Image (cartoon, rainbow, N blue to C red; front, side):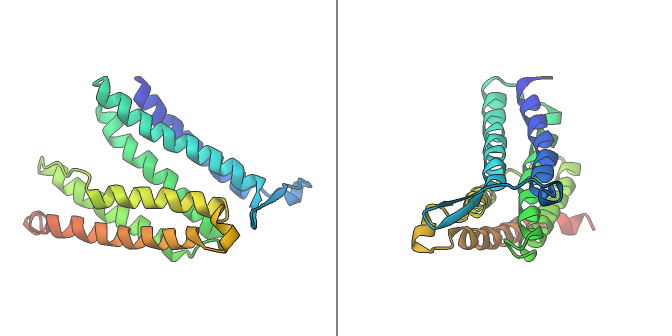
Length: 197
């Protein structure tokens, strides 16, 4: 197994670790996780750990793509597993944030629905030997999702000092871009989908 695929698998393995750390019943076991007050932001140690793991996982996403392209190590497994690892990571974080009311559950529902529809379109395209390349809106969606996760985990630090809810703003921006991106994929593939019916 080559290095890019190992990095992809590492990203997948980090997902259940994120869930365990975020959902672990610390108080039940008498563990008091500290909360740090920095620039009007209350940031728990749990969120700091999740942020670090998320940052490491996001870096593996960047490097596995760079290494695969530069060293010509693109494989069928990599093409299949890399987008799955990305969606597992980001959607898991959003579901965890929704589970404790940090964000509305509507957000991950919309984003997961969009991803499912786009994946279905890609599957139909693959059966017709048509490759649907990643689009600008899709990449913008990913960037805004990652930015929103960072600010949500860090409780809007450093913008907390002016009480600006950057995390909430960015997650709704990401949600809107997600919907627009999904519609864009659908409209571009409408003729192909109609032929398949």
